[in-house]
Length: 332
Image (tube, rainbow, N blue to C red):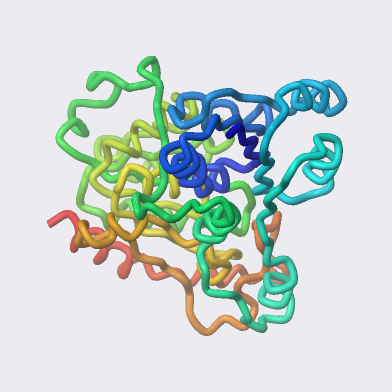
């Protein structure tokens, strides 16, 4: 059986869909092909459960011709948008399509009426391939780092080589991120070595946070690529993260996670995910931090460029003492 799986973006969503590829390969012994955006190549290129990759880079017509030549038995659409509809129409084969909760998410984020199915996005992705006889194997998420991106011990300061907290400070939108002053407070309170993890877009914020204690805090933002940053997360004793891809990569490596939520929410069925086998084997997996009692939270599926009500209470009122206490509970 030859199967094409489509998930164009984002980092987190692709990682959350990773059990689908593993279960298709191991349970059906299928030939699994994967289509994503060119910019997402690093997220899956080392995945041993994927036999062949295709990348979208404004080349839809050419891509359709390449995919037609493969003569797939099934197309598994885990993205479900107009572009994937166009591809499925062109391939004219059997399709299995992920069921989005578009209306339910709209009701939650715009009218704050919670009628969500209370079923994690990973479980719903696995439900997509259930008609093929595929079942959840309970092993959680996958993430694979190529050998060239495994960081040597010397890549981080001596002060951090015996253990550290990875603090993921980035986020795709403003409303997903703690303000710099809140991150400074948190770093000041945590009595353990800290590595700030993020991209080049997070460098300015990281530099301000690092000033709290340049010995305790190592600023890795912008110094490493995605997979090298993933390796930092993999080796951390604890990961504190906003709603971002590295949060789910941490889950794939069975790292304990403290997930901080602002404009988005775990109620959108996207909280950290480990799989039932891991949850049974690991005493602590994750904890969500959401400011309670806000009638405006969540305000978006994906985050916004600014707070719609200008007060940003979902992050400004986050309790740094509570997050610090959770950190100490895990590390001591």
